[in-house]
Each structure stands twice: as structure tokens, then as C-alpha cells.
Amino acid sequence: MTVHQDFAFPIPDRFSDVQAAPLLCAGAIGYRSLSLAGLQEGHHLGLTGFGASAHLVLKMVRHQFPHVPVYVFARNADEQAFARSLGAVWAGPTQATAPQPLDRIIDTTPAWTPVVEALRNLAPGGRLVINAIRKEKRDQEVLLKLDYATHLWQEKEIKSVANVSRTDVAHFLDLAARIPILPEVQTFGLQAANQALMELKNRRIRGAKVLVMDAP
Image (cartoon, rainbow, N blue to C red; front, side):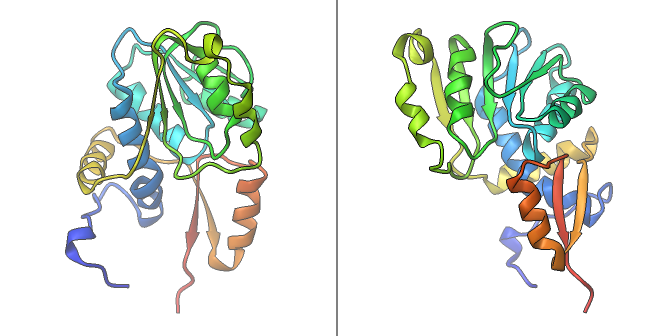
């Protein structure tokens, strides 16, 4: 396909096309989320969900903030083990309580339960950044369980990621090439797109899933 040059980016030679694909989406939105989090050395960071975006955020944090401990909330044991293998100091279920209150949390899930649980785990004055494009309605009723004292009191903040700018993408690709950040990737032929979607739905996730177009 052809795109206008204003919306195209030079891909660093460090990356194959398959490796670059998740960097342009999950990686760039993770980069913006981390920027909005305002993370500093001395903070404790939480990540809710551990798929394409979160595993790239963890790799960025390990490079940019090597002394910031990262705590991961994920639904299944495989994702939790994957997070620990990449450097998370703790990983547990979505509704677990972290070993200590967290200063910043980035939510990368399409659900509402992780948001409520993240607010419960925030330290006073902490910030939750929601980087999901949309939230599903299937567990929206959990918002009725919000308790002011537990989830919102003491100046906790919520920020959402609206869009990823062209500057975000350019800066992130440069950073990813310098570190380098190499995404964990599972590839699927276009004819297997439904299989990939079902695995995402059933939370069978390790890194990012990339569809590879069949040659004509």
C-alpha cells in the first residue's frame, strides 16, 4: 500500500518488519503512557495486564529507570512468569494486593476490573494511566463498587492516553533502536487471523501477535 510521507516513518535497520510492527502500535502507546506517568527514580511502578504494550513498557523502564521496581498484575500464571523473566520484582493476579502501595500504575487492559484494582493499589498522590483504546462493557458494573476512601481519596489521579502523536512514534523508534528493545513476537499468516484473535480473547498472550501478509 502507499501512505502519505507525513504519516510514514523510517524503520531502523535494527528491526525486521515483524519486529517493527508492534513497536509502531503497542510500543508507541506504551512510550506515551510512560511519559504521562511521570515516573521518577524512587517510585514503584505497577503494570496491569501483560501483553504487547506492557512487556515493552517493562523493557523501557529497565533501561531508563533501572532502580525502579516494577510490579505486574496479570490474569494467568504464564503472563506472570513472563513478567518476572523480564525483570518484574513481583507478579500476581489482577485482584491481588501488591507488596506495597504503588506510585504509578499503567493499565493496558480492555476491562474495568483492573482499573478499580489499580486504584486500590495506588499510594496517596499516585497516578493511574489508562492506555487502552477502549474499555469493554462486560465488567462495567464493577465501577459501582468504587469506594471513595479506598479508591480515590488522598489526591489519586487518573489520566487517559488520547492519541499517539507522530513525535511519539519517531522518538520511540529511535529509543528502541538504541536500547535496543526487541519485542517478543508470535506470527500468524493472514489465514490464521481468527486463531490469533481467539488467543487474544482467551488471554493466551506472550508479547505481541503479528499477522504476516501472504505473498501474492
